[in-house]
Amino acid sequence: MKIRTTVALAIIAGFGLGAATVAVIHAQAKPPVYVVAEIDVSNMDAYMKEFLPKAAPLVQKYGGRVIAASANVTALDGQRPSRVAIQHWESIEKVKAWHRSAEYKEIRKIGDKYAKFRLYGVEGRPSQ
Image 1 (cartoon, one colour):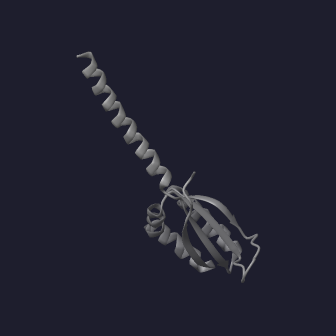
Image 2 (spheres, helix red, strand yellow):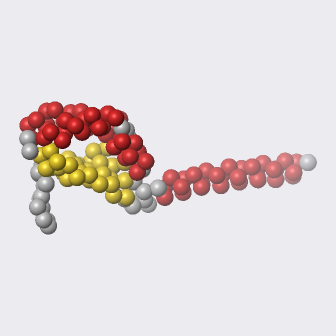
Image 3 (tube, rainbow, N blue to C red):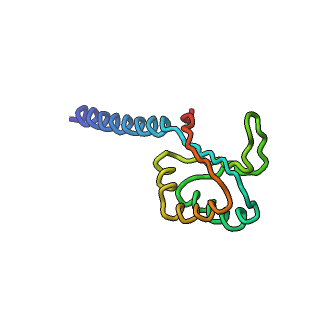
């Protein structure tokens, strides 16, 4: 009877270990998403005072993280925008939830008064 119990426990432990391994592999395989914003600002003072203090916290609220944002942009090809921002997100689903939210749409109305935006999501490489 002791052997049967040991074998049964070993099988259960094997299933548990296998399920945990699959979960870790699945989490590692999901690539991050980066949102790149090219922003041509027509009124930098108003943009910085009225739009940015509301927009940045909203990104964080929805799970994004601003990893770069500056007017110090060096053009390597083509014309440079007056400002660039790069955000890191866990998934495109979180990006879409942020971008489609009523809060973002309201804040964006303010931003549109002072700037023209070009945003796009770029799938990153999975962590290794």
